[in-house]
Image 1 (cartoon, rainbow, N blue to C red):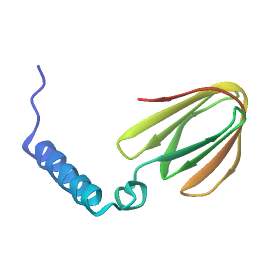
Image 2 (cartoon, one colour; image 1 turned 180 degrees about the vertical axis):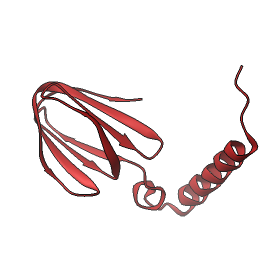
Image 3 (cartoon, helix red, strand yellow; image 1 turned 120 degrees about the horizontal axis):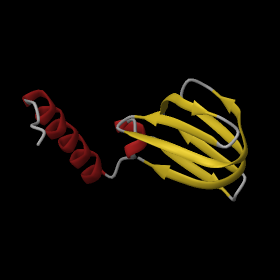
Image 4 (cartoon, one colour; image 1 turned 90 degrees about the vertical axis):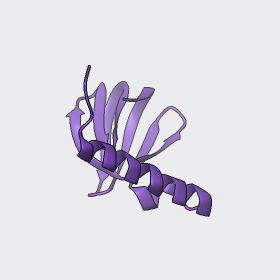
Length: 100
């Protein structure tokens, strides 16, 4: 059984406190907490905001790391069409989007 460190427990409490404040004020979580934001347009386009790095990139799978979560986009003929430091547009035939 894993035991949490004191530092990890404090981080979790701070994250929960921030989320509670953001929820109560009705503010957008993606902007204030750095949460990854994904917009899917039909079967052919995915727009990702607030990602931190690309883990894997092939024409069938693109894995992206965000703050506290990773995302796997699977399909056919996948291409990162445009990207900046904070956002990207993926085109191709999108089959699935999985958070892990």
